Image (cartoon, rainbow, N blue to C red; front, side, top):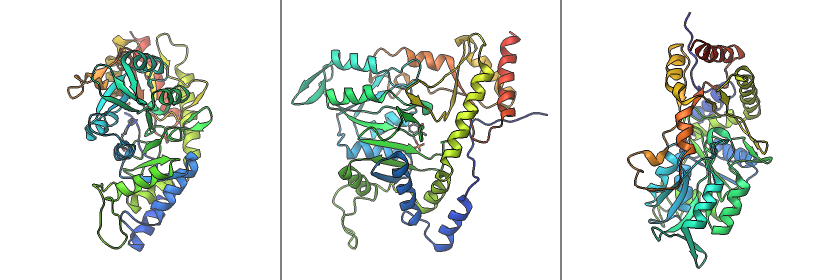
Length: 383
Ligand SMILES: Cc1ncc(COP(=O)(O)O)c(C=O)c1O
């Protein structure tokens, strides 16, 4: 009998129906209501941040954070090349320019050594602003991405941001519950952004959240996400705002999902370990693992294989009903970004050429993982 193991599907096993029904029964279905507040409070508490502001999705969370942190047309923002397209697109939404950096071989997150080298050799400082020597534009911010749930090296990034006076907006869209030296990702930068898309650790169908410890920033993000309305009664608006608020129905779902976050993370980590043990000791294969200073939520399981086998192995697994996916094409190679500045990017290309993501839904059984692993092992032993 043929099997089908999807890459990542949501698991809806808690109070989702009950809470969503409550929204429907009470008529609180739109962008105000008790569940929005509850979900925000829960996320703030969980990430140990003083504020959380819900947004329509992770992309809008990143976009609004850039605006609220003062990114202006013509500014430059440092971003890893190995990330989902949204991380760079939001920079362009601000009419700012991305500066693409390489990834670290082990974590797949931004390579902080190369970043330091770039800033040392290619920028100068004037009145506490860092300028790009080539373009003469101000470099204002870094968006580190905690790729597939593994935390980026936040100590190095905080030190760099301090030295060069750069804002940090963490793209924590994939890393809910992951930790860097015992502290939750999303809580290090000026702002941290989460996504609750259907394939994420928890989902609202679609949704996002910005967390921050900066009172003024939180207030401004809330203001901008609600069309910059400046009066509770009058339709008075003091700047151009956005309709970026999450609905109560979506928040109800997110809140129900968050009630089970510890269980979800335990399962994800157990599954990752089963994968690692099943595929260990096979020459040429490596399940990307966490660094000793990091705790990953293992949102995605990444398998490194010899380059010449990436495509054929993927095709073979798909033919067996196992949904796998390639990594993102490094963004600096895409048509919209090929003329943007990039700095010595080699590892991101290598990761793209050698890595695939394996099925990782929360409801994956040990038997599913065995089936995936046996097929991978079978592929290599039949060469
Ligand atoms: C790294 C990264 N950044 C940003 C996003 C955008 O989040 P959303 O799809 O909720 O807009 C995603 C996920 O889709 C992502 O994986």
